[in-house]
Structures are given as structure tokens and as C-alpha cells.
Image 1: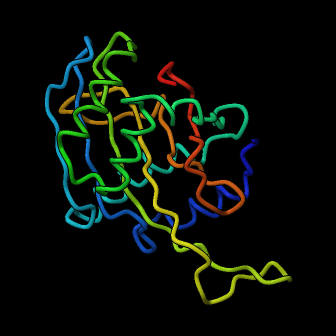
Image 2 (image 1 turned 90 degrees about the horizontal axis):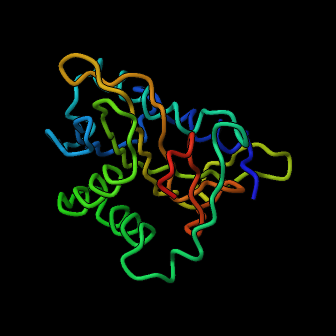
Length: 196
């Protein structure tokens, strides 16, 4: 299934300090060999406004990427049936809203074993909710919510001094946001780093 640019634009419009959709941010700083140096896990609103703004910019880079060029949809139906799959891990992380550090470490290790840019990098994971508004026949939003899209964004970036995250080089949005709805059978991948 192709990614609809309008779906991604609708989602990113909710990614601002004023209209924040994120409730949690977690992450790990990886050495050049793919091992965790340090990690963190905190409610998003505990960050200062400037930190929120900086991190929203990192998160936004994933869904805002150019569909079918930088951002592609990958079907995970085969993974759904396999034991200890990445799909099961992502579903569990979504269910716990990133509040389980052991599951997060499993994700960092999974990425560390497969992603090898040759330099230290950071992994940031954001958890958010978006109340998808009902649209009328005239395509105008109504007041009520059609569904709540519960999602995670993962951004993988090179690290600068003092664990400063650079521009994301890879990442994903899970579950996929398709036809203004949740698609747990797919993942939207940014510059596929060979994880999928």
C-alpha cells in the first residue's frame, strides 16, 4: 500500500509544542559498535519547552519525509506470525506506552545488531496519540473523534558532542497511518536501514 502524503501532513500538524501529541520519549545513545552507552525514559511534558521543540523536530522528520522515496510502507503480516518477532516487540512497546525499559532495551539491541553506520548514534522513541476527527461529506473535520491513533516514532541520528542528536538518518512510524486510520499490519519506514 502506498503512503498518502495527506495522511502524513495531517499527522505532523499535531506535532508542535502548542498542539503536542506526545506523552513519552525514551532513547539510547549507542557507541560505534552498536552498544548502549546511556539511556533515558521520561514523560514528554517534563521536558522544557525548548527541549520539546527540538525533539518534536526530530520526531517530525520521519512522517514528514517524502513518501515512496524516503518513506515507504512495509507489510509486516509475515512477522506477525513468527515467534519473538520485531512486530511483537513493537506491539508490546505500544501497549505499555514505552513505560517498560526492558522492552526498550530489546529494541535498542535489535537496532544495534543490525544498524552499522560506523559512528556513534542515538535512538529516540516517541509515543503519541492522535484523535482522528470525523470528516463530513464536504471533507471538513467534525468535532467528534473517529478513532484514537496510538503510535510510536523511532528516529535514528548521528551523535554530536554531549549526546546531541543530529538530523535523523533512519527511523520508522508504527503502526502505519493509512487512510486516516491505524494499520497494525504495516510499518512506515524512513530510509530503511536494513532492520526490516
